[in-house]
Image (cartoon, rainbow, N blue to C red; front, side):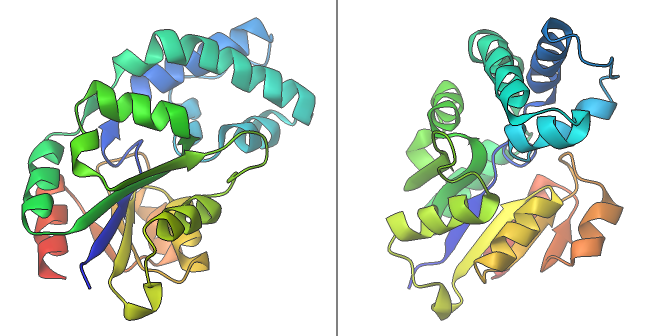
Length: 217
């Protein structure tokens, strides 16, 4: 069985913070929600957006959905293009593909946006499956996104040849729900303390460290 690696998008493949934070500030301003510093909004990068808006600002689902809508108004037209791949990611993906790994993306971002980001950077060529969240309550958790990616690949996770790579605790926890190990990266938006608390399989510091570890599996 070929080895399968599922990647998170934001904070793992793509340094997307600037576009995300500016789009969050746009939505916050439009809805007159309490002012937040750019640094405080880093917690929004990665987790499902509706859930994060509702819990962070203590707002209703209806208002949360409006915030998400406003966020996407800006992100889809401007914020998307304020992101860039992390240094070394293109080489990493190319090398893993050459070594016959099966590569996929499992992101909490809406699937159409995941595909748009990857197409923008010409990364779709590397992936055999690209999965994001769906409409409404469809795939609104990390574990559901991972489960769908495994289903589309017809992957047998019991063979022990599937790994998740992400930068936040919800990547580790979502992978654990689906009974696959997660490798955490420290170059993204998660803190060392956050990641150590959820005990991933491995924590790496850089894209080169990540590549070296994946090639050793």
